[in-house]
Length: 245
Image 1 (cartoon, rainbow, N blue to C red):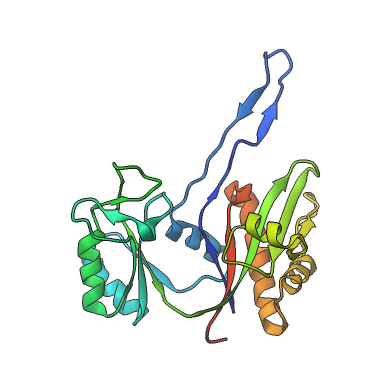
Image 2 (spheres, rainbow, N blue to C red; image 1 turned 90 degrees about the vertical axis):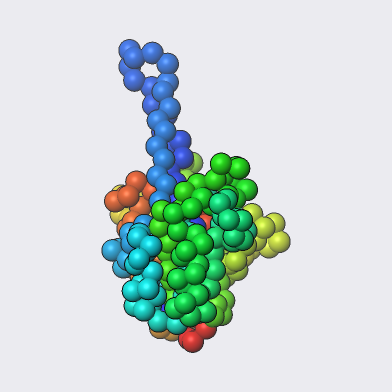
């Protein structure tokens, strides 16, 4: 089964309209910033496959959350900044904001070291950002990755979906190494993305058989998220294959 992981998505400045008699053109700016667990909740509602997860919002909840997911749980600080894995906790100099809990006791220890404290990364500056929640996700072995994105193509006046058989790195690096590796599919903004288009994209991205059906369902779900959540661009989106496939 393919599943999706959203690093973050945002709505950049995108609209510029001139109103008759209202003076110069005005630029509308809207931004949508979600924690990782919030994006996973949105995805799940729209039928996009996500790994099993639970959120710790109170320190005392960690034990129950770990028990609900079983062994091999990834514990991730939830702050609106990148570089969490290489960051550190300001109060105790605990290294890293993303860890794999080896067992229940380790999960409780990680929670004690990170929850309610301040995470400092390259993007936060020295002030850091408060860790008010922890995302706990089932751990699995990644077998392969794909790249998928949806953005607004202003020249065509509609959405453009982009995919690649190669994931795990930036789309710019992929395009520079092999431009033919990038798959582009314009979507009629009035008709929306069809199931057949989603299946075609999944197959071009290298999925076959039942995996192609699962990936197509997630791709179509991602497209449906767009109008309901005001999303214009995903900065990076990976479709991953679990190791037990």
